[in-house]
Length: 340
Image 1: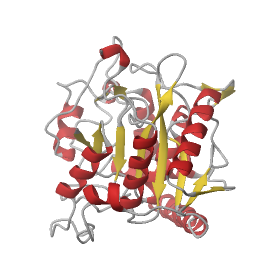
Image 2: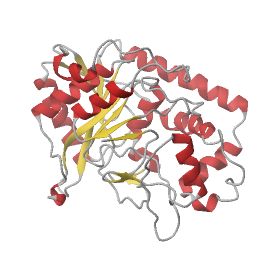
Image 3: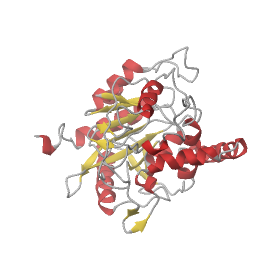
Image 4: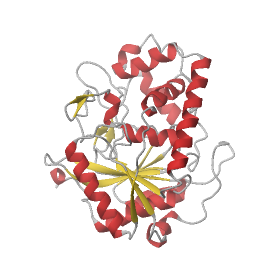
């Protein structure tokens, strides 16, 4: 079990980042306060590619509500990132949240103590009758057909095992990628040491270079407009949760791709932006509510696929409980079949 803050793509379970001896890597360690950070280097350049590892690695990945786990050293102006757990079981993820959650006077965004223990909620919380909203694409994503079939089956298993009610969600959140990239562009500049950009930009993946280049052109007026668009997206989310208690989607639009990259430019025969491989995690980060990914199944090629459960504001207990329901109804292996 381990902590993860910003999302990272990787082989199970290591994320990809700047090479260990890069000044970019040292800065990210200081900013995140991490004790360990997995990294690899490809043959051509040092890479850092953001994408959720949860569904790609066959792990439980819990993204708590924003502020549930305090992060005093955070420089997140856009409030997109949190600290959460990558674990092999839901119980481990709940235990970590019990230990790490609670207010901290050094972090004004930290939430009050939760009303009970999450380790108890995963077995005791009554979820019968909950309205489970299902959307394969949220009106804008293109999803690999095999991922679609695996996640749809897992969703039906979850609804049946929990004696809940399925609600098909009809909504479109097509602006999420552009909003996320503009919000995240600001955070990349906070506490950035002198001499890294643009002087050492060649050490970064081209996608990250593009983020910094866009940040060079982002004015205060443009940033304010992005916040206005974010508010509209959050209002749309709130309206959706008037009709559902949780939202379920695939964790990612595709099975895992090679850890060295690049992220795919095509899904199901259609050209896409590389970030569209992981469209649902970005949307969850914009909303700030709790979400969890649990193993949904395995592709014909032996790659894991994740099911993404998104809760209403501050309902970490609900997403953890539903994850446990699926874990009991459809147990997943603790080890990769290749590791046995």
